[in-house]
Image (cartoon, rainbow, N blue to C red; front, side, top):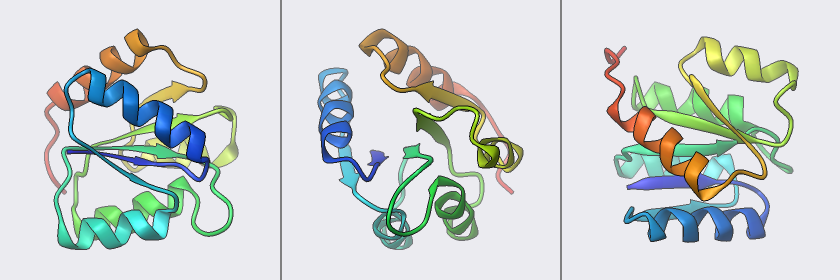
Length: 123
């Protein structure tokens, strides 16, 4: 299961359609709060997480809450703002890959496969 967390409906739809085309099961959420609530009850193989979400928690705050529940949770940042000051902090706590919006199907496929195959110790 891959979670797509983005405040923009169109971005959730496009990313979800691409992932489903690639054969993945997908759940979409419009806020970090919704994603955290889902993670409390369900595991996810991967989370594709927007950095800037309004209103509510941004990608960094969302991931901080998620790793309290599921240490070592794999996630990919998807952002149109790769220079955002909070991106560096997100990388420091475990989000190693970044998709720059807009991204292609091939880029999504490669990045998802790399992240899913990467072995990391759970905190």
